[in-house]
Length: 232
Image (tube, helix red, strand yellow):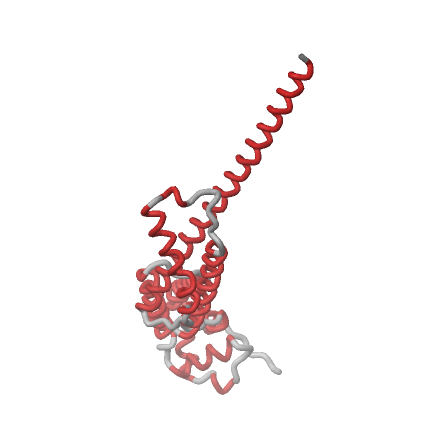
């Protein structure tokens, strides 16, 4: 009687261990499939971004070799799964497909980030704080300066992340043109005044720059006392 009970207990323990091993294997495989799906979704999103960048003639380093290595295997797996979903089981060997998809996504993202960074650096303008500081004390320029600072911050945020759609790229271009227009407004002041303000904001203007035209301009705007003359 005792011997039979012990045998039954051993059988139950063995069965429990087998069930646990099978459950762990199933969970591990499900985690793997979930990761494959996540990487595949990420790859599709990156491919859409790549197509959008190319439509806007943004140069991207070629990735043909990577795609040609992975794409046929993914298509084959997809076709076989469509024909018979049961082919994807814990016993099926997916080989290096999960690793290849993950690596392709990482490499493609790196190339897209580099392309977007190069494009935005080339196609925007730098508006230094020192330049804007010139006009902080000019009443009629304050609204424009505020809009420039807002646009500059928005563009900086957009440059830091990949665009998802054509609309994102077009919106970036529109904002860059708007920024250029606002900067031209500030640069539209009389040349003598602009030269004086630039020098004053950069550490000090020579006395020769304080011409009659500049003094009159400052006086008309109540800015005559905004500057001081110091001996060097």
